[in-house]
Image (cartoon, rainbow, N blue to C red; front, side):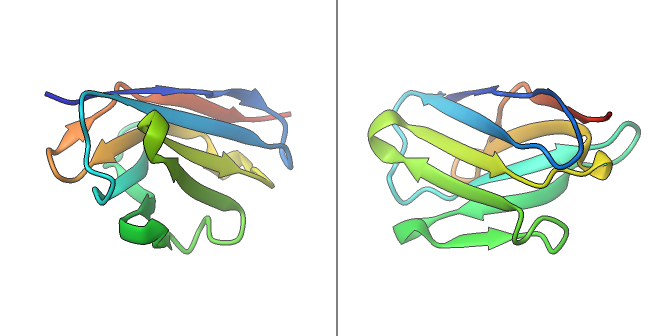
Length: 113
């Protein structure tokens, strides 16, 4: 069973940057689609970005142009580079492996002055 562990969250001022990482234990296919989601208190998780076969990426409109998803298959790690952060980006961020439906435990991102 694949386990996912996120890291890199924290407190940052508006306009700042953070890079989230999601490491996978166990074997995952290099073509597996991996996603980042986020969740606000009392809300459903919402899609943020995905990276799939050959590095094809997809983004939610709210983050396109500010966030960049990437993967390093040799390290079994997916990244989310978040720039120009806004207070509305404050949420718990989760990574997700579509092939197995696995979720990480989440990492808190807080954007505040």
